[in-house]
Image 1 (cartoon, helix red, strand yellow):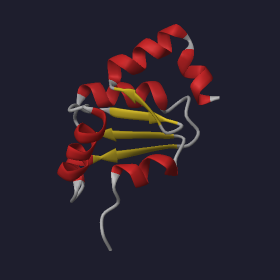
Image 2 (cartoon, rainbow, N blue to C red):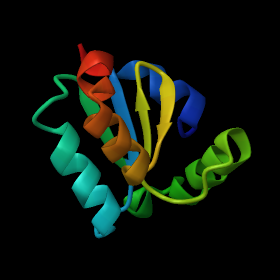
Image 3 (cartoon, helix red, strand yellow):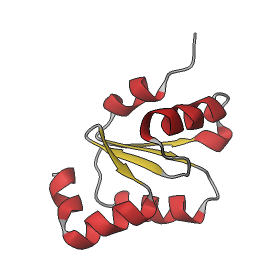
Length: 97
């Protein structure tokens, strides 16, 4: 079985995050999303066999080279600071509704 691609993983859940286990920005993003998101999947790319390939796909497709890389309803949100900005503006609750 071949490893799933970023494009295949994103539509499977309302919220998808590509993360590293010990990344402080990833930890913060999970803290923000976990209480709010009912259907969330976190892919810890640093623990995945094809994690480096997924990271390359994220960069190639979204020009995003850091983690976390967050998607809500298939829309690329960005990283932790982008998530915090839409949380502060009130947009996050609307996107998760």
